[in-house]
Image (cartoon, rainbow, N blue to C red):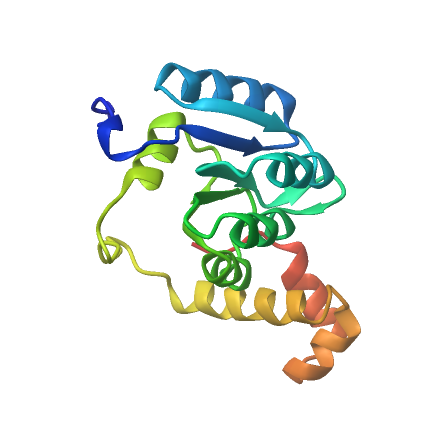
Length: 184
């Protein structure tokens, strides 16, 4: 997909924060976003990302879900308090329905799976529609079950025994499910 030129007349502020712990991906993405007209600041951990937001909250943000020193939700929470109008996108290599819902509640406008390129990120940030298009290939029943297990697991602070108890499932069975990749 080739990105059209951004109409900057509707955006006074072009400030962008990219928080990503993979240094090579961070460098590539920030350069690509700068070439598209954004004024990019970068951080590779939660603490640095929050410090940048507290100094000067950006208009846009791209935040990785899993970061050194915490997770991207912590960064989104501070951003939504500092600048509620900020448009943010969450990137993750670990799709999880629970974290996607939480990210949207904290103000993220989209949740993209890695590897996402700069065109995908900009398209998500600039999207103006109120509703996303319906999925071409909806989740299978196995995937829905896996997402539910992942959600409960996250809500139990990644405690296998507590998750198994709440799901009324044997702990060893749950461990096998968690060790596998997500079904399609």
